[in-house]
Amino acid sequence: MAENREADGVNHPPHYTGHPSGIECISVTEHMTFCRGNAVKYIWRAGLKNPDTEIEDLRKAVWYLEREIKRLERSRDV
Picture (spheres, rainbow, N blue to C red):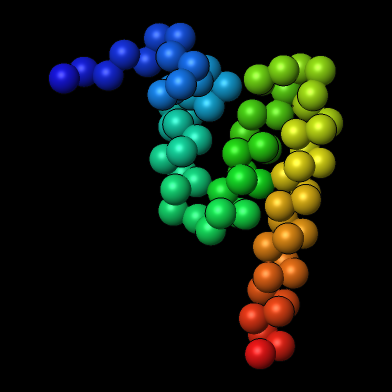
């Protein structure tokens, strides 16, 4: 069965499927840790889902990256 990728806000939202590469965001992020995947997700969609929240999306990406860094630092202290 062919997938319908037209205006599907649940399964294939345009702000995650509109990358010029043709790659869908989840195809990349599902191979990452939670925090890294979320950082990529927020970078990917920055300004696309809502142009008014582009800076907020980028700040969220930084937040997830900082959390991932802290997790890695803790694991090395063990």
